[in-house]
Image 1 (cartoon, helix red, strand yellow):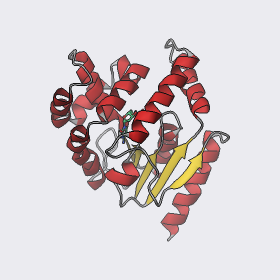
Image 2 (cartoon, rainbow, N blue to C red):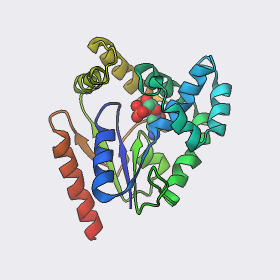
Image 3 (cartoon, helix red, strand yellow):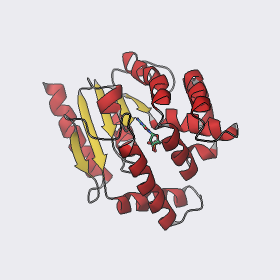
Image 4 (cartoon, rainbow, N blue to C red):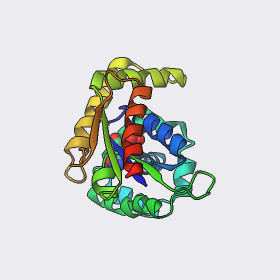
Length: 220
Ligand code: DC
């Protein structure tokens, strides 16, 4: 079983993906990590984010092991990390270089400890449209920019990171703009995706709705 969850930043994709991965014992692939890894490596090497050739070289050499190493860096999940990921993810060559790595995961999905899983949950922007167009169930999760900025702002505070709500909101809007309007694999719902607007839903309500869809699919 392959399930994809796409949508804008801070819509609740990660939490939903984790909940579903736990409930069904499926592996989870947060595909934003591949772009965050390239952006962070660029940053650590002092490269300008506009340097497409450098981004491509890093993308071509990226391994799961190195990506997980980079994920330990506090900048990996920061606002800057998200912004840099969004910039490098707009380069078609970078996306092409990272596609196989993402697609191959579904061929033999594994948990973090390496044990095999019977299914996989992907989350990202183009997982239902480009990475796994043949997925069994596709969700597109969204919410208003203000609600998403508020959630992201609270997350930063809870992690003890400094944050300013208006800056977070501006970041969220800029990222939406870039992710939705790039020429290659723009963020958009797949034609057969089920769309949930989570602005007025709790994560439990969203999870319940998603489970209903998956359970129905599994009983077919
Ligand atoms: O989901 P995230 O915030 O970790 O993603 C960081 C950036 O990576 C996002 O702004 C756009 C890019 N991305 C993408 O282009 N395609 C994906 N499947 C996942 C993320």
